[in-house]
Each structure stands twice: as C-alpha cells, then as structure tokens.
Image (cartoon, rainbow, N blue to C red):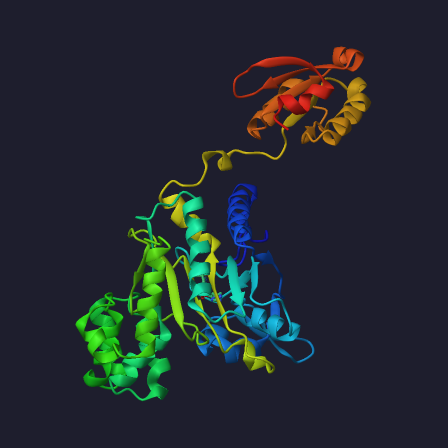
Length: 431
Ligand code: HAM
C-alpha cells in the first residue's frame, strides 16, 4: 500500500506559496519590533516537562501538549509556548542591560482539536520586555502590536485590543467574598466565557463555583466592559489595582491607541500572569479566537532563583494573523505569484550551455537572481515553464548571444523586449 500523502493532523506543512506568506509576515513583524529596539533570540523546541507543568498551568502543559519520556527516562515536552524558556534564559543570564527587549518566532506544539485558527504545530511571534515594572512597558508592547497591525493594513475598526488586569479581577473576587484559593478556578471559568453560549457558560459557572452566590461575581466580572461601571467602582473603586487600570486606560488614550478597550472578562488562561493582561481580537464574526494574547508576569523569572525580574509581552499567532488578513483582503496580491528568480535564462541548444552557465554566474555576481534551464528541452517548453513559475523576465541564450554577448530580455507581463549588454541586466530587472 502506498504511504499516506498527508502529514500528521494539524502539523505545519507549508509549500512555497504558503511559506511566502509566512515569510512576509515574519519580515513585517520583525521590522516593527526592530523599530522599538527589540532583538531576536532562540530557545529550544524540546524542554523538560516540569518547566511548563509548574509555570503555564496543567491544562496547557499536560492535557494540551505533546509530552513523552525519552530514551534517558526524562519527561520531555515539545514547547507549547515560549515564555517559561525565556524566563529561564533571563534568570540564567543574570546581569543584563535591563530593561531587555527580546523577540522570537518559535514554532510551538499543542495537542488541540484542529479547527479554524487552531492547529497542533504553529508559529508564534513573541515579544517581551524584561526588567521594567512600570505600565510604560505594558504600553510599549501594545504600541508594537498596534504598529504591526496597522503596518499590515488593518484599520482600527477591524481589530480591538481588549485589556484588563489580573490584580483588578482578584481584588473584585476577593471583595465579593471568594476565598483567594478559588481565584485560579474563577479565572479559568472567566477565560472561557466567550467560548460557549451565555446560558451554557453561566450554568457551568454556577456548577463549578458551587452556588449562585459565589458565581455571581464571576458572571458580573466576565461581562463588565466599563471601567466606570457603578458595580465595579462600588466593589473595587478604592483598590490600587483599580487606580492602576484607570491610569493605564489614560496612558493608552493619550498615546492614541484608539483600538484598546477595557474588558474585565479578559483574564487569560496561563497561570503566570500577574498584572495587565490583553488580547487582540477580530471585531468581525469570522475569526472568533484571539489573534494575540499577552500580559505581565512579574514572578516567573524569580521562580528560577536569583533576582526577581518583572516581565511583560505577548504571543501573536501567525496563522491566526494570516486568517485575519485574508478575511479582509489585506495580503498583497503579488504574494500569490512571486518567484525568487528575477530572470529565467533559456538555453537554445547544448552548444551554448557552457557560455550560459558562466553568464548566469556573472549575472548572479551582479545581484540578479537567475534560474538557468537545466532540462535541455525545447526553448518554447523552457519559456512555458518560466511563465508557469511567474518569473518576471526571460532571455534566450542562442548562438548570436553567445557570439556578441548581447541579450534580449523579455518582460513576461508586458511582452516588452529590450536588447542590452549583460552589465545592464541588473538595472533592467530592478536590482
Ligand atoms: P497564548 O494566548 O497561549 O499565549 O497564545 C498566543 C497566541 O498564539 C494566540 O492568541 C494564538 O494566536 C496563537 N495560538 C495559540 N494556540 C494556537 C494553536 N493551537 N494554533 C494556532 N495558533 C495558536 C502565550 O503563548 C503566551 N506565552 C504569550 C506571551 C508572551 N505572554 C507573555 N509573553
């Protein structure tokens, strides 16, 4: 029986047209990061399971992960995210020129049910500031995120950045009478409030919180999207966390981040967040899951011993971002047809091959990307192939060209032919 032609379910298999889109996103995103002084780093794909079991929460580390015991008997995990590895790197580095601004494009693995925007192997963009505890850092990472989106052509009506604070949510729950030991459960419930119908979710909340009274604050918190709401102010208006949110909201406003809105129901699913949390959503109905999620994690680095280094950052899914851009027609059309070669060099007959090989090398030296025919098929077949590959320019090397060193370069889209010497080709193809 023939082998299956399909990769494992949910795995990232990108033929060149798909990879082109990913590369385009990586280029644009990294450019935005660099504009704020971020530099790239790498971390391992394979990690000890305990790194994630303690830091991310058991749902992600155990239920939603690829983990196994290796030949040395160690419990390992294919990283479901990057933040715990980053925290370890920073803890190990000790003295750095804080605040550090680091970014990375990890491929991550999660054992999830594949569906729109959710796969099992995916590339994320991570951008984090470590060593700065003020809200200025939180604002800075949100500004990068916003620049990425606007730079890709998304307008402010298409996406929203919903933010809140875990400290505020904790203060509300505690003042509503919840025992602090129940906060993680309450966060888990709140985090899922928009993944099921309202009725179903409320029933689940009552059941999990063991009673309507205890579930009341959870349900109210999840639907509060007004920082000035009388309920919120009456319960937590005098808390430091509330004042901090008011200040942060003002900072976002004066920085012109019109896409940001407060939503108390944003608490995020990962255990390590300690302060501001946020996520970026499509405002339309097509893409319902978060495109990006992030927040502040001030205690993560300290878990590795040594000094406490506060952190804030986000993870942006490249697949979710691509789906969003496709929904609104924001991917450049030329991505679907571009080819790395500027020029296809057809070879008229084998008598010109040696000349053509050397000519192609000289053209590459001058910066032109050249695909030279290697098939020896007829010139018309060679040109047809170049056309199917969408290579923009074609030139045929025949006895005349080999004799005079002059080329006739044809632009495929317009049919325009230009006679030139090889030194002029780079200028002609725009290199
Ligand atoms: P996260 O919310 O788990 O956060 O993931 C961030 C983003 O990664 C999501 O919003 C989504 O775009 C993408 N993503 C997550 N799971 C999948 C999946 N199964 N398939 C496709 N895309 C997915 C984190 O990972 C945090 N470590 C982010 C962070 C960095 N917080 C602070 N610094």
